[in-house]
Image 1: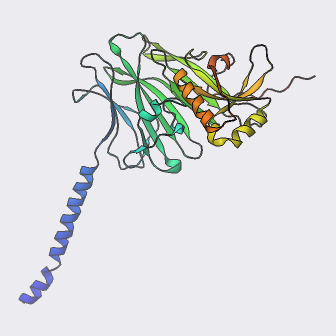
Image 2 (image 1 turned 180 degrees about the vertical axis):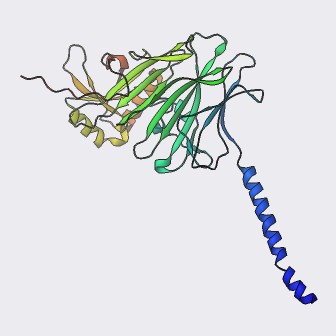
Image 3 (image 1 turned 90 degrees about the horizontal axis):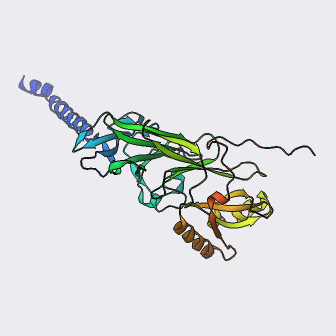
Length: 335
């Protein structure tokens, strides 16, 4: 009888052990699901100003929202705001610098200094990067938070949003999302100047040039929002002109032949005063120092290139079309 009783009780011990391991494993898994704080940036220079906190909450779903909080002395102020594009499941990882993320500007060192957090793989990729911008004319050194996201892989899109600190939490003050098509965008932030949205459209038409457009983002304190309006680029923003050609096809052929040097350049139609229109390979620089460094890079890359620098405003036509709207193709008038 004793042997029979022992035989029946033996399986209980492994079952208890398995249950204990499962319980401990579940507890450890739950403990590991903690909110991941990605960035903490000051909202101003005034004493006691809260910090903007970008984080990824503990989430086991396939899509988890990036969250933005205001934190003062460890306490949350107001309610959090969720970014428009959620992250893929899992923790965010730091990504190497790449112009495709739309952070900073096309040649900016700010893009090298701003951390980009990425989640997912290939078409499921979603990134987030944050930096602060000074609010012109606002007392106390108040700063807005610029959040730039990128989604996708083969045809990535970017989204920019500006938030300001309020007693109710982060307030969305402006946003822009690239539409379908070959667009790429950045938010330029010249020192002491109002932010500028820079949009580039790469035309798929063989005989049509690319387009570069700018819109200023003016702070409206009464509405707690940035007003977006067409404007000429600030005087500080420069265009590095790598070379000029008689037509679009010639410019694109030259770019393809020297892709290592000119891969990021746009083919822009220019109308210099007193000269026939021509097509130029152009890159945008936020200031003269960037333009000078880019010119040196081009000369070192190819002895055939003799770049020059001009204010971007001199190359662009008057901004009459909103960025993010694909230009209509104009037909030649009847002769």
